[in-house]
Length: 171
Image (cartoon, rainbow, N blue to C red; front, side, top):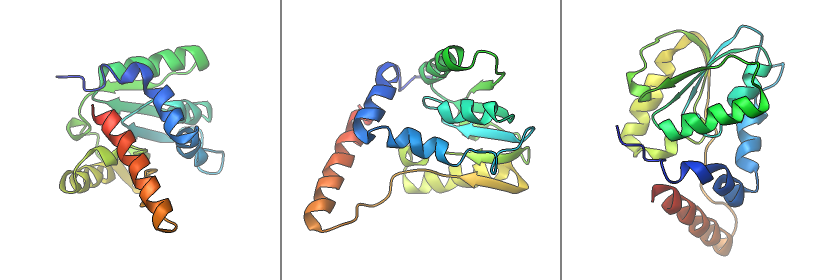
């Protein structure tokens, strides 16, 4: 299995912060608090990235599982967990999310800044699969990019900025 994040993974956090001014991190952790996460909740994070959102959920008492196809990103997550919260137990799965068949097992399924790596047809298939991994009353959280707003110049600037980031991560 080829690790597409082998080269970008080591600088993923830096580039994410450079691109968003830490807003991606804020977005990923914003929905995780005592009102949305209860001790014992089973939460799945698809495409772990830097994983601070998964660490936050585990700190709140959730039973957390992270899935990533990239060995590099899982290693980066393990390093972050070891540094920030070594006492927490977080299950890591090195796999394609479509091969995870733990249907109806999770109270919350999180796919932050994950679905945008797929073309539209595949994105729909992945989202349907993620929904099946959740229990009947599970929540599904998707934090991702949105279409640029504002006047013509602002929209063009935002599109150019977004495409530069996408191209960098694609490389």
